[in-house]
Amino acid sequence: MTTLDDVTHLVRDYGRLWDADAPPDLVDRVFAPEVVDHDPQPGQRQGREGLRQLLQLYHAVFPDLRLTDDDVLVCADRGVLRWHATGTHEGDQLGVPATHRQIRFAGIDIVRVEGGRVVERWGYGNDLQVQQQLS
Image (cartoon, rainbow, N blue to C red; front, top):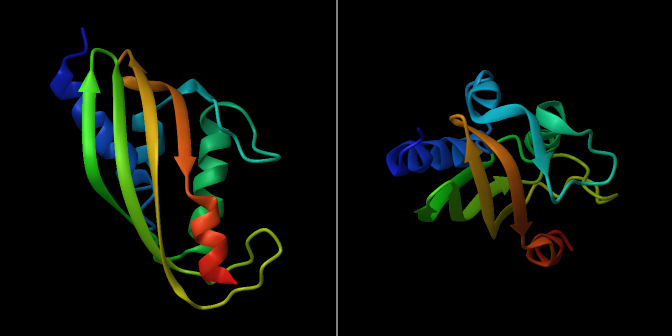
């Protein structure tokens, strides 16, 4: 049985995944192989490998990406992470060449946990906030 403390710890580890210096094996510890991403990026594969692909994309664009937990809320098998992140835009993103600007953006992610791993993810980042800072 997964406790609220277990879910809280997993949500915090989920947030740490977005840090550029996150341990490489953290993806396998956080996500179940068949995890469902309800907010995939265009061309993103399904499952754990798709989320690994997404993280690699963010780390390529923002090689110093750092995510900060602003709130962690847990209820039963669900966790909510309200976060903000900072990073330097060093890679192309949506056709925007690297600006070398330090940016800050925010979002909220929801995860469902089963068997000690994330099996579903809903992610909502403020893309407009990012685009305005890169313009």
